Image (cartoon, rainbow, N blue to C red; front, side, top):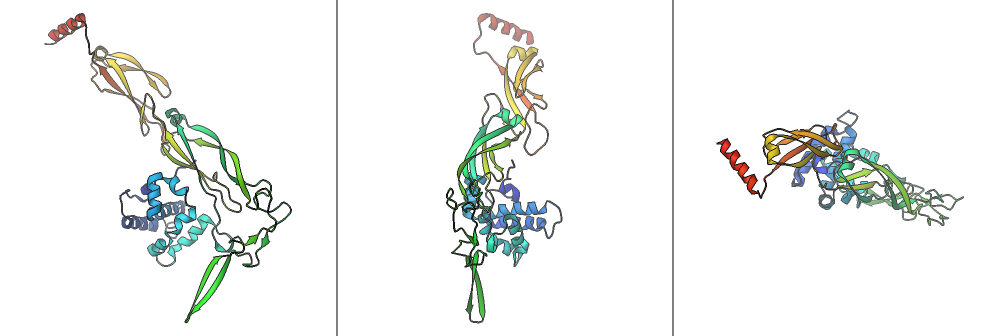
Length: 359
């Protein structure tokens, strides 16, 4: 289960940055990580990541959806190619004519279908869940029954009635597209459009499967198991290829929207845990031993004599881990000193004696 990084963080810009600034920062990073310029093994992945971030943040509609709903708002509405499609002209402008090799990288991400049209991809599915702070500490294995489009088990995704096969489309000769040439003066223009006969598939189903009606997929339920990793934060996380399935293409993703529930005793800040413990003013003055809860059980700690209000005692390693870093944080216990609101006569006399003895 991998988490997509925040697009603004990927590009190193703020949410208020104008498009010109985003474009400038993208050009800087893209030139740094372009595979033709950078030979490191992770350069292609960095290049794809920053290109995806730019494709979303440079588009007004996609950026608005992302700002409102995060990754799920964009992934749930657009296919991966759709995300890039609107920005391809910008890539060409940034790198010069031909996109500086972006087209070939684009194809390597999404593949090519018949006739040069992009491979179909199933849509993503959003699943929302909540976890406790204890789950953040230990992680959690989840198993859900997901309602989605699944491959037809009768035709195994082909869409054909068992015992039959698809036929090559005679209109486009299996290319999935039809090219037309128009001559205007001394110039010729070639355009390509999806074949209307086979709808860009390059083949035709003459005898469709009766169970899925030639779609190769149908509504169904699938048991999906995934891990909520220790140290998780509230946000959107991706379980690859567990979204809707599509015949002859790639599955969409399952987007898991996680919300970490507030805890009745603890507050969390990153890897650290904070807890308030009340002690009487007498115990604070004389010192005492107290027991405090942690996410892993009870701990005994010493309150030194003369402790002042808001004294902080650190319990090393009693925090949680963080999904992007090593080791655990700490738990910080804040000493809250209780001053009694009402005193009986004997208590007042004792305090008067203490005050006189202190003068």
